Length: 164
Image (cartoon, rainbow, N blue to C red):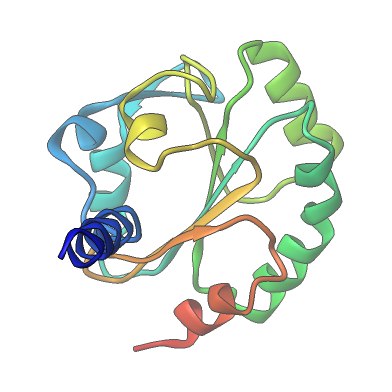
């Protein structure tokens, strides 16, 4: 009997951990991001402004080797899916490093900074950010269709971008 309860408990824990939200929380939608021109906007406003379009979110930082290695593949996806909105969210603490990297790597898309970096903030907590790069796909209705990919070569990115 004790083994059965233990297995049930372990199964419950793993099912809760693997749950993937379909919507950002109210707190995440209200989190303030900084634009390249130092303007402020919430994530919810950005998602709302692009209703009717898919959004590929790329969470990255200028110091992240894996992020930089992935940029050429992101650019290939941009050519393959030109109607998608490419939202780059930088986890850089230094705004100058972030802005230099956008120019250096010629990153085309919308750019915002997570002002608290990758270790703090409602967005970071919500997606349980422990590794970058991190890719997410938001559908035309604003729903999260791909919650977590850590490699741009992940086949689920293309699958989410192709889905209706």
